[in-house]
Length: 211
Image 1 (cartoon, rainbow, N blue to C red):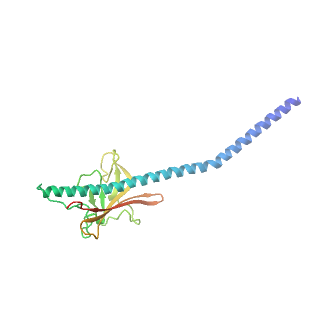
Image 2 (cartoon, rainbow, N blue to C red):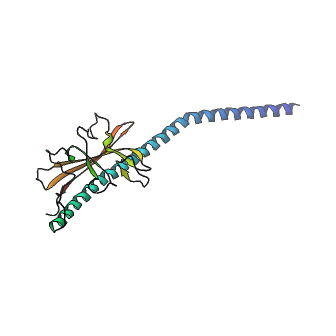
Image 3 (cartoon, rainbow, N blue to C red):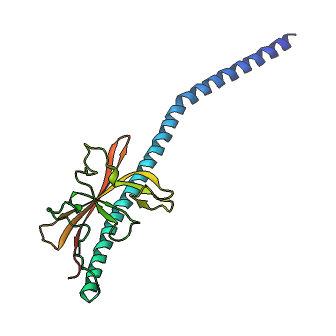
């Protein structure tokens, strides 16, 4: 009988220790879990920020590439017309002229569209449109970019399958003190986040590479 009582006592003590260990384990998990979840949340958020910055960098570089293409097309068109082709020869910086007196050009801001036809890929902003790097103003819908089903970016929201993105892109062109042969082009991509507005800026000096 005594042995049976001792066995039952030991069994209860073992079960008691198991219960205590389980409670301690659960308590430790509850203490550690919020920290783990917080770290995972921060990692996911950081990854999203990095992805947006990478996309914005691509969009700014694409903007400069579009300007480069327009400049080259203007020069080649002028060469063809000078050689006898019909039409009116454009100036080398047609569509992205930053002349101070010309409010219809990109001194006051232009939108840039990678999938628009030549002559429509750079469009001047309406009067009084605020620049995207004006932190005191909301981002203007004129510069809003949409992504197509093919993964391209456009300012045309009416395209089939286009979805809005958080990005706004603006082209600014300013005449250099070097005269009519040099144009400073700046491409700004901005987007709003929970931590405030972010932007990526790329700039380049463009010249008429052929008379």
